[in-house]
Image 1: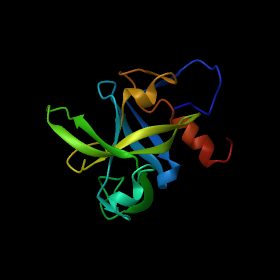
Image 2: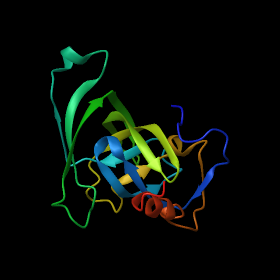
Image 3: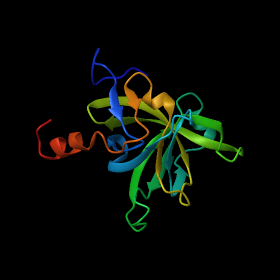
Length: 164
């Protein structure tokens, strides 16, 4: 998917974890782990309910309503969003287990970069990070410094202060 934030700027450095915005889903400042070992990005979903039958949505994806709990320290904070589930994809988790996951496309804002990415939805309630940013979401725009964290935090402050 083409990026929309910049043209030929050099890649931005990110740490092994960063704060990300997913505006299509109503999420701001979600703690995301940068995982270059993961091809696809993954977002924790508390629940997913399809809004239409499979037969009615064959060529455009299937409308669904998802409930997200973006903060593992506050499971009572819920965010609900409507999405188009593009298809189901097979993903092998870090333990080697194959899982069938819904795939959506959504907008990612990470520092100065704004772009559409593919994200699988999964129950990550037992994990430390509710969001994993895989290498396909990062390619072409970011260089990962595994020894650092929150290198783009200043962008969030400037955006909150209205300076961006």
